[in-house]
Amino acid sequence: MNSRHPADDICQNTDANPQTGAAKAGRFFAAGFPNAVICYGCICTVLLAPIALLFAVQFADHAEERLFSHYYYIRTTIALMVIGSCTGGVMIVLGADVSTYLILAGLLLIASTGMLALLRCIKGITCALMRRSPSSYRSYFL
Image 1 (tube, one colour):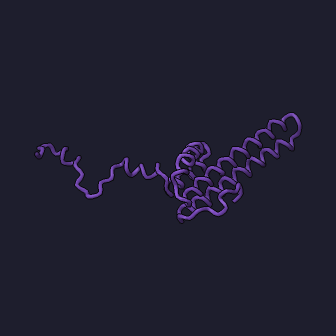
Image 2 (tube, one colour):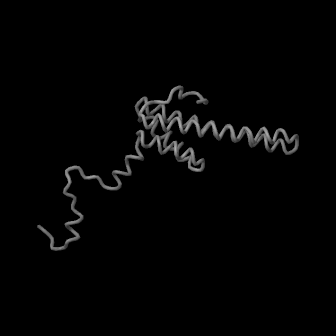
Image 3 (cartoon, one colour):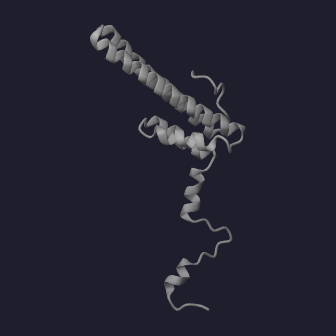
């Protein structure tokens, strides 16, 4: 039965392949290369790195080998950031009582950790866009 209200006709989708906004957004929240790129972007912002870690842990088991390598690379990048930042922070705190050089070494360690994480994200994004796995993804270096 047809309705006389034009709003009812607008809501009906006559496409053969309907995709709602939720279905389009759902692609980014499933295991895939677009999700890996989003995770690398989250790591670059540092504050959203826990979201990238959540995605990497959740989707690693259900992914093929190339995607698994990306999610493993994301997890090692976040581990690198945590280890380097915490070690640098401890060096800064200990250097307050001991030596100024220890403070500078801690700052240098935090800066080099940030640069290494940024380079790893750039490498991961380029590999994900080319749909190939990063080389030596189990290493903490590039």
